[in-house]
Length: 460
Ligand SMILES: *Cc1c(COP(=O)(O)O)cnc(C)c1O
Image 1: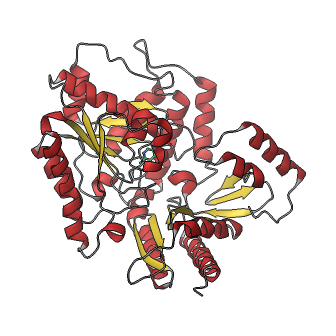
Image 2: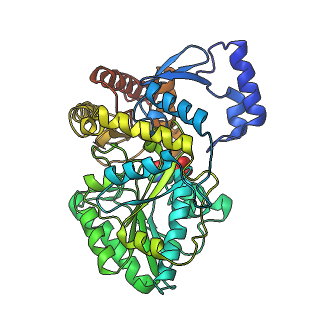
Image 3: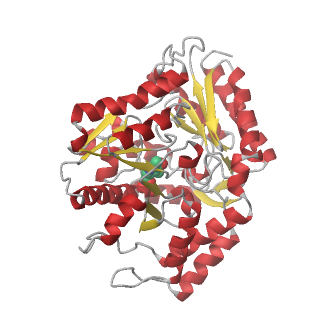
């Protein structure tokens, strides 16, 4: 929200309450308190509305999650029905409920082949912390208690709880909480545009995949528990792996008997044009983590899906498994997630993201490549990134003090578009229900705002 625009008293009241008492995720609080937080009051389809009546087109589907768009009656009705019939019961004490049972069954149908047992959590972070415990337990049961080191990647985002943040490779997340914990290490990621230099994408894909092999050999395969990775790295800057990358990772994990835990929190549920990113990239996961699109964000819910190797060992263990949340398999969250998946199937949203809608989105994204400030555009399905650079030929970036991406994002908000900035990479991840004319609107506004920041920088 532009600071110069007058605000209603109601907006000011909410902003004051918020500034006084609400701590936000990833925020410098005293700075936000000066301008006041944007107050979003309602949403419909692909549009958000703020407390000043301004309309924004949501190029980020909330936080990569609102696959079916806002204001879907089917999801609201499903939640309301569950709230009336069974607002809460737990899954401890040999108990289940219809919603959790049916969602588990549905997930076994839509997730990659072989993934067929599901543990429910309430956020992607909890899913990854649960996965770390599952993997440790698995190797303990296998009588290989030394296999404990987790290898993840630089620029990875796996969430904020202690183990998830340790897996994350965004270094700014670590020092405040003395992370990563011991036993979590990070290797290079396949960020070809930024780090590939003169190599071809395929060469660079192989090189960064083989960094996993080098790390395993350095640590000793007998000490390594798992490799953990997103199919496409999201919050680290939308890093799309070269075609050679994942096949090599599959091979290395198998050769050294390292579990492959794939974090599908963003890529799951159609984002890359298939139900899961693992399918788009031919990944062979032992287990996956999912959240975000699972309920289109309408309810907090996550799930860790286990393939046969890990799932059978956990399932057949004679010990009681000492893990689980009060809200694991929450009936309302499961009911809403189930309705969400039914809408996605009925409206063929995954097929559209992998077909006509995705193709149209990628075509419009690529057209931005001609802009003097745009070094590269890249995308897959309904994910897109636009790298803003100083020099297209050398890929040189602007100095970080200039905050080019952040300032572009401000122009976007001021002009009615939500487009995220990750450094100087602008990122789009719209709802899967988006229409072609709405895609046109996003790219019209995106170009306008890139023009505005280019003008600020004296490029145009
Ligand atoms: C968002 C995200 C998470 C964390 O999910 P929360 O629900 O915010 O805890 C984990 N992994 C990936 C890949 C994500 O994008």
